[in-house]
Image (cartoon, rainbow, N blue to C red; front, side, top):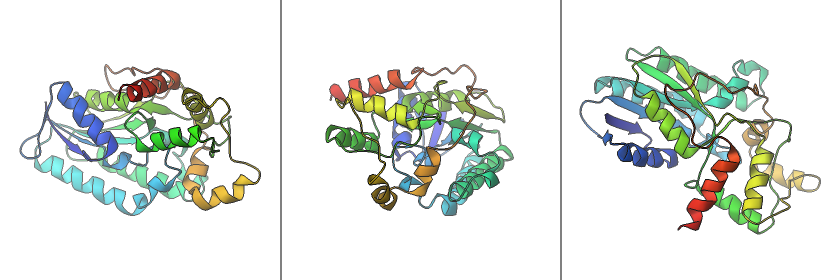
Amino acid sequence: MRLAIGGSRDELGRVLSTQAREAGHELVTTGALDAYIDVAGQAPNSLLHDGHGWKGYVDGALGRSQRRLQEARARGAGIFVHAGFAFLRGVEQPERVDEPLRSIGHTALAIEEMVLAAPIPACVVRLGYLYGPWMKDLRSYRTAFRLGRPYWSGPASRPQYHLHQSDACSALLAAAAPRRTRAFYATDGNPVAFRQLMDDFARLCGNPLPLHMGGPFKLTARLIIAPEHMQAVKLKVPQDTPGPTPPGWKPRYLDHRRGLAQVIDEWSRK
C-alpha cells in the first residue's frame, strides 16, 4: 500500500511510520496514494501531559485537518483515515461539559463530521488515551515516581479508555484497508481510571506507594496543571467496550498492565 502520514514527525507518527514499513507498506511524500492517515491531532490524546498538550488545538486543528483532506483528495487517495479521540463518547453533547473541554469536544466533533462528509472515502478511528515506551511524558513520570513526587491522579471511580501506541498504529493501518465511510473505535477494551493506570506504573518503576496530590498540594497543582487535565480525569464515559473496531483488528495489549509491562521491558533493553 502506498501510504502518506500526516503528522509523521510527531510521537505517534514516528511509531506509525516504523510499523507501516515493517508491515511492507511504502511511505511516499508525493504522487498517488492508496491511503492517507492523519495523526497530526494526536499529540494531546494522552493524560500524561497535564493538559498543556491541548494548547492551540481549538484554534488550529480544524484548519489543519481540512488542508490534509484536500491534499489527500488532490493525490487521489483511496481512503482518508482520521485519528480521533475515544473520550468523545463522554462529550457527544459538549454543552454538558464545562470549558475548556467543551470547546475541545466541539472542535473534535466538527473535524469528524467534516471527514465523514468528505468527497473521498474516509473514516474516523477514535483512539483511547495513548501511552507507550516512545512517549517522553511517560519517561518524565518514571523520573517523578523514582523521586517520590506526588501527581494529580483524579478520582478512582472514573475509568477512561486507554491504548498502547503500537495498538493504535495497527488499528489505523487496519482501517486504511477497506474503502468505507464510518467511525471506528480502538481501545484496549478494559477502561481504568488514570489513578489506577499510573499507580500500577509507579509500582513497576519501583515506587510501592505513589502519592496523589491533595490537601496542601492542591493550590500548587492548580498553578502547574491545566484545567483540561483536571476535567479529563473526571470525565464520565460509558464503561462498556466501544465499537465497532476496524475490521480484523484486535489489540495486542488487552489491558494496561500488559501494555505497561511492555513499556518497562522495552526500556530495559536500551
